[in-house]
Image (cartoon, rainbow, N blue to C red; front, side, top):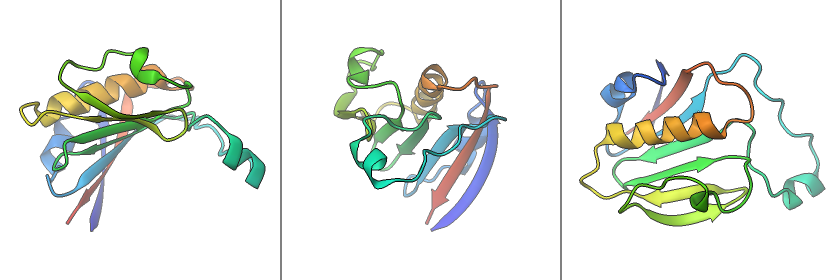
Length: 138
């Protein structure tokens, strides 16, 4: 797999769309100046924590029509947000995140917009509208 880093703004997902390949995937994360430090090392905390990362990490697999986001806002995220009609929630876990299946007729741009908007809303640190996409292609 090849990896490409693309910087973009929350207002324009075009640069991500241009590099996206249906056989690959993309990870999206806000680009913040003061990123939260990683959790302290330790077996107990990592095993029994019920929270995801302070800085959301979203993933889009266009070929599989699967979108997900890891977050630290607690359980039952799907009941607290607007999941678009027709999208099916397949996982909603406080540490592993939310995963949805997206119907084939939904454009990649719409999914990316939803993930970015959701990521900004769920971030535990202030975001600036700048994002980083890590695009993986065959």
